[in-house]
Image (tube, rainbow, N blue to C red; front, top):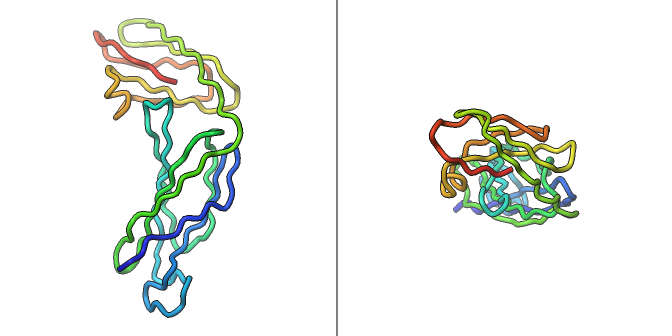
Length: 173
């Protein structure tokens, strides 16, 4: 049986998390404990939720046995779930999970204004800190906003999005 990898949080800050991955047993021979022989790589997913409406995910495919990974461009004081599995010559391992909350103070939610320019364009503008990346999510229902919204990113404080005519939309920044 292939064991799940061990995920160890090495450090975290306001905008990053560093973690290591290792196997506790040798998959090929099981003679040398703490060896990663036989591991061809790992697949890591980092999940987080914005405003309890939209779950985001970033996937890393790590080749080989690289031990410490750093994930940057995270949000301060935000809970993250990291899951990983090992890819081996014998198949994939079960999943491992770890949770971490970044340090610092979470930025205030932006104040969003959406104004129809015409039947197919909406100008969205908001307030908030400079030098950050904003995600704009929009959909015709709360369910669609949570499951599969249209989205765009920008470091500006406004964006024009194209929509379908004769529809009402919900917007989240």
